[in-house]
Length: 127
Image 1 (cartoon, rainbow, N blue to C red):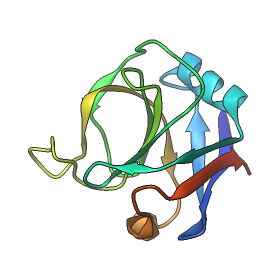
Image 2: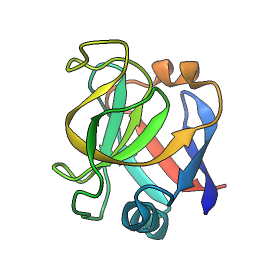
Image 3: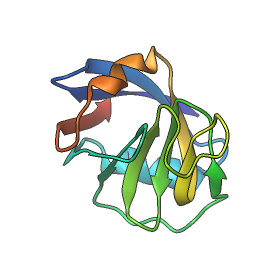
Image 4: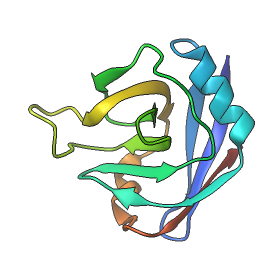
């Protein structure tokens, strides 16, 4: 199953993404049930992350992810959007601070995510 969502903020308008339950079904279903989500952004290199009101255990967790990945960070109960290298990256791929559950990907040009600043309000909703 793939479900379209929108990630919205005043700085970027909206950007389309897909949630997939192929790899981590419990995480994907938990995120979908929590929508819509509104929160304040925190930045860590080229990673956007923000608190969400759910807790999910690690599920096929990993440290290194592809650019454009949507993931859930169990250690912080956060929604993560990886759009480039993070302080933990050793190569060209983003690396999480600790293991994350991958559940989706951005399907549009991710370059506009660079406009988002720490503390900005972000909203995630079904498309």
